[in-house]
Length: 431
View 1 (cartoon, helix red, strand yellow):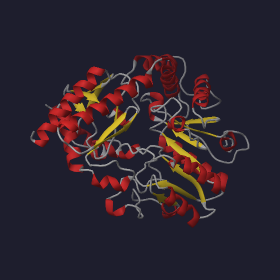
View 2 (cartoon, helix red, strand yellow; view 1 turned 135 degrees about the horizontal axis):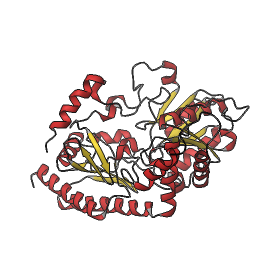
View 3 (cartoon, helix red, strand yellow; view 1 turned 90 degrees about the horizontal axis):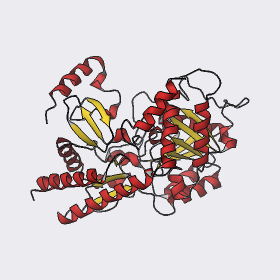
View 4 (tube, helix red, strand yellow; view 1 turned 135 degrees about the vertical axis):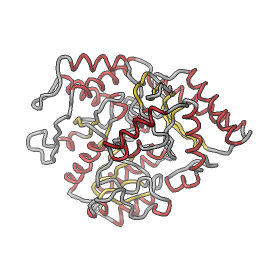
């Protein structure tokens, strides 16, 4: 695979940008410069074509450059853009759709990124409860801000310890964020008791997709709901990844557990920038978008025509076409095919996933929380993905990262991917 042009452009990018990329997790080898995306495929500057399962960390539920979404965006920006006062018809239509479909959404506010949404959710929780502390879970990711940027992809010897994710974070923010073990209700209950009357919110990825796909064990999410009710604590589901991808109503609809607040993004607009926070009316009306509200909410680009039009179009397709049926079927076909390959090759590994998401952990049991992922063979995991990229299958070449199927993927794409995977694994195992 020739990547000469990508390497030239990457060297140029480094002259003007630290590291040559505009988000830290994009700095991976091979250093490719992408120039086009269409359906299930992405293309680099050298013309190499890749079957894409990275999906920009999940937004592309329909596929790249989906014509229905793009046309709706073009139509919207031909008549409107951004006004900075009042509301737009697009904002009203989108908000109504979110309230219609998401169980926790009595009302909704639009913003631009998942990090913004989780920031607002946590600040609102503190305003409502008059408490300072929050609980998050080891390995979960909720954005780049100080409130939550700790104990994400921690080194194994830092699990459960004080592990801020960045220099420059405020000590008060770090120490007011408590860290629990996912799928461990007893740990959460102990933490609440040890900080009685001090915990404003529990924030959780209902499925921790930041670390691949670890499923909630029976009763875990229900138990969090009960603990929050008993302790006057607000339950926040961070559905920036799971929302709209796992159901038009989010994973909360699948699980039958309704949080107090929900954050959404990524798949809600098929790659266009937008996010949202939704929740109970009595909570949402504390935002000062309603006169008399005391919790600040503002943003110049909130509700921009591009993101709102894209999100309306994406949700319309989910309403009118078998989007979830298709991606769930292909997701299961991929997972089943992987298990068959591993059995044929006598590999004792665990294929994880839900709906359209999948990954293979190179370990011999199902992980229940982040600490157990240290048993995954990280070197093999990343080397395997590099070899797939060389053969035109793009999975993010980082340890414990999930893959995504889109509405543009076909049965033939899955069959081809499985063939390539078996070839690569045979090569790596010398079989």
